[in-house]
Length: 503
Image 1 (tube, rainbow, N blue to C red):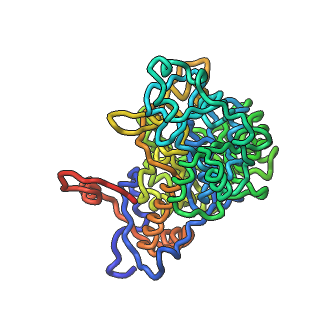
Image 2 (cartoon, helix red, strand yellow):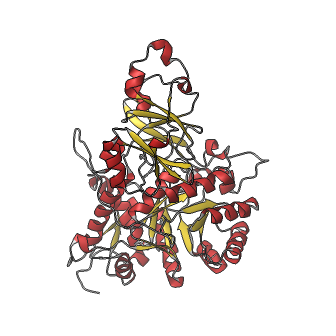
Image 3 (spheres, rainbow, N blue to C red):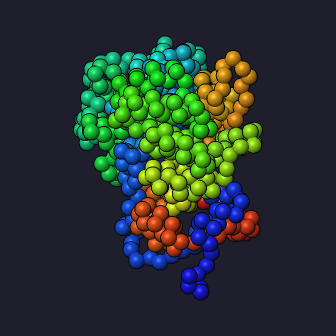
């Protein structure tokens, strides 16, 4: 080793008995001989699912449903649809995601027929409130709409009526367009007919509603590439399932709906239940990739690899809404977990998802360079336009609910099986319910974030994920642990006030 080498190789740093998080470690810069544009972030989610960016949305019911899955696929990543719902609903979400050729999540409010509009907040940034049977666009059966101008002209007595009593119907075919129409034609029709919105349909069912406001909004987003497409030319979509007997029936319906990859969703994946489910999936659907987890140790990972997984998911208690480490005293710092599992998985060519602990682009760089093929994000994407749920206002801030799948609120809908819960016994929370600020659209958030990640790779002298992994394993890339003071120094400090904008 040269006499002026600094820092430590990863193998030495992560073998000292400490459980490191992403913030605990820092990479030392290397040598740059290429431009940022030359960095490729293409990767694999699993053995047979290629991605052009290493981004995966987490299977949480406040993160990943149809609009998130379609948006992530359009950007070159992928979304994993949650299973905290009945079988038919999850299959429907997958079908809808694949039908959202233009993954535009409308900024308009969506309400139940019994809803009472009490303020203009219900319209959000849009001129419309749409009415569906479910109060969401997840399984939309569009019943009608209300315009902002219509509502403002109503008297106080009229405003106390249920929305279905005064909404306008949109059953006329003049509002409807095929789901696969070009976006330029949608824009032209909105201008030509002077209509405020159009309804996109597939096989007689509503797929999406696009307003003139939505078209204007997405014009300002960065251009996307071809996206993550399957052999059928539609978006690739993943789905989470559990390990119970009933999940075999769920899987059958998901395969019929066109799911491209399944994730076995468990907080502790090294169990007889998951091993048996892996073998079942591989035997019943040999062409379908199955991702196992969650794991944080080489021992856990080895058991799942031997059972036949096509990918691994790493993380236990590192998510912002997860309390597993606090409640159960089990888990691992995410940086250590990612490095240790990836070191083993690489020997078998198994891609690894770093799940949890992602708060900024620097965390993504660290996860990927430490060996992960992709990063799975929950809180990072929650609060976006594409995330499920309605926006609310609190202390002047626009927010959306974000909850852990281990929270009691989520468990009452069925997510307790993720924690190997028994419905007849007491439920112990391993997560919380909270809220996150409005992040805008992931169609804007993710491209800017990926450019920041490319800049990180450039500073490290890595032009691709494979290059980063090779530099780490050959001990060319060096790391150091950061003291608490170093972490403070590495962030914004010493100011009376500041405004932090990433882009």
